[in-house]
Image (cartoon, rainbow, N blue to C red; front, side):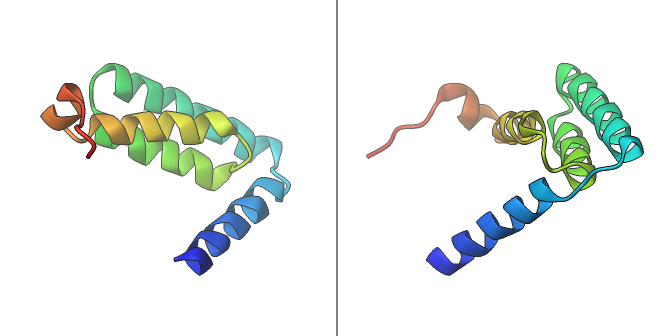
Length: 87
């Protein structure tokens, strides 16, 4: 499990460190805006997909990851609304 986490962290660093063209950055921002609109319309899975596309274009923007995380939480349905009981 630790090896998988290390690989994931290395992939994130490589993605975040990669230079991004102005065109890719603008495209990522447009996808984030569409993701925000989908989120506002409660189309959470669509929002997740749009934020993921933004990340693929520009992995250096933390907001794309946080927005996607919140959208993922909302896709869990009624359980997410009630909260979780941890033992």
